Image 1 (tube, protein in one colour):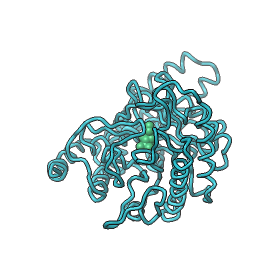
Image 2 (tube, rainbow, N blue to C red):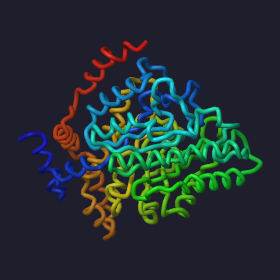
Image 3 (spheres, rainbow, N blue to C red):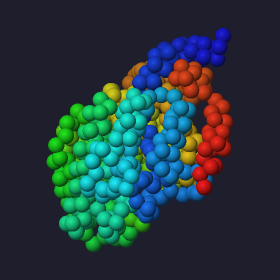
Image 4 (cartoon, rainbow, N blue to C red):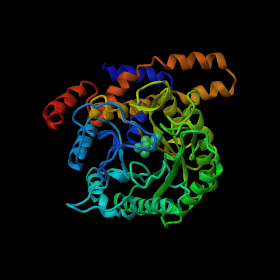
Length: 417
Ligand code: RNT
Ligand code: ZN
């Protein structure tokens, strides 16, 4: 009997069909962020990363050009089981020789290489306007700035991104999630908290007034509790972003990043709350350590719990757009990419192999002692054996893949001066 056959029997006794779980897991798209490959730098500017986010570390070999980034992404994806989408930020526009256009003038053609890359691999594309790392961020503000010129520039950027998202969806035949996140905020206690929020609201209204097909483009607003340098106040707070999405449900989704809440709050608990009201929601899966540190996603408790909620909520799999969002510059970036993606795949597979119907029944019939016992038992089920089979069926290595990364580092990354 193989490891898989034996594990399959153990799960079957609990009413779990592991073959069905494996099949299902292969169908759930997870969006892979391009920005892990080069520390959120992009190709359209030389300046520093701003907006209250920061990468730390100086591990050698980061991608410096579109060619290098795409090659690294390909290498990383070859080691990840499961269905992928590719998440592109606007600052990753790829210009032809000598050409440059500013963010307010971006066109679909500036992302043609991304479209070709995704299409050749049968993948969908997601998109993000880049409201940071740019000279038009004035006094730390973009869409909420009191300066009309500044707001106008960024509104034009947002509209351009809607058009690009529509193009992505048309080209790939897969809906494009377009996430709006701004780092706007203040380091210290503001004298006016509402003004910036009213301006931000009006700016998003103006962006979403750009025509688009709501079946193809899924605009989101991502909330945040604080950023580096904007510790006292962020314009796009949780209440602001959730309210915006709720009031504009016909064309906007809420996006929760699990690094963007107070440390004892958990996004896993917020998923069912939002799915009670919103037809669709979006997630950034990350790993905060003490703050929004964007560490590589691991197969840890909250990651597992997020996957559990996606899987056990009514229609949760179809109604939740999952994306990853982390950036670690202190370790091999491809290894970081792969570890995070595989961790979330593991969490999804683990959730799909949980006897949720049985556990729910125990809860609904108030058999809480047995529910606790069974939930604890589930923690030591042989998920590793199912994972190995899942990787095999996906055609990627279940173990030993780091050797591949090490070889790539030696042959490719280490040659980048
Ligand atoms: C920042 C947000 C945002 C970014 C990306 C690069 O705190 O999480 O999603 O990480 O847009
Ligand atoms: Zn995020």
